[in-house]
Length: 108
Length: 135
Image 1 (cartoon, each protein chain N blue to C red):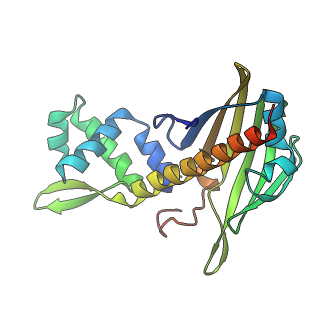
Image 2: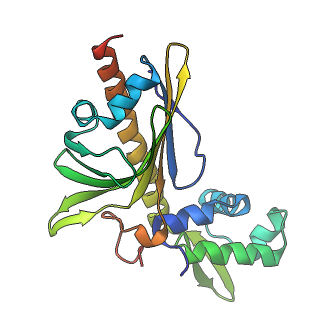
Image 3: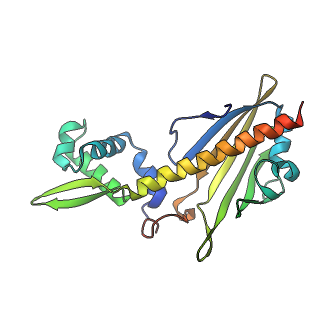
């Protein structure tokens, strides 16, 4: 089973080239494999493989533009993953502040 | 504030660090004694702080259940837990995660690091995920 959902997102983002692909898609909008291969220090085959991993994780989708395939971001799973990290992080910020207050009130 | 924030770190993991104004022995009690946990982690806390011991607590109307994985007094505590989120169709389990506490003496207090990590994809059933994002 391929990882999907939030874990799929984290798997996809664990690779620096895939993160760079995501960054470019978010800044430049839909791109083709050739667009990316020209700008990234990896082969066209490697770019295609990364795009397929990202699509598998639900982070990007392909659209046909005539004979060309262009890829664009599908923000749902990304937002889900960022939301999880923000939510859990905020929970621990609150809890640790409460723990700090609790220990202070107990005194030395 | 005393809580420190790290960068993104490992994907799927949230890390927080804090320096607490009490020695590791006192911090350990705050992490493992139900009466003390009730003053900062949630209400109605039940915890048997031994490997395999059960954790249960309530916070903001949601219930959390957990199991202790490892407890090394004054140094390290790990448990898995999962929240039951109330929804329109009854309670839905949130994603299962592992929580780890790392304690070490720091000056006259304690440096505490907390990590919360998503478990394997098969344990991940999110209450808020759009249908289709999870298989």
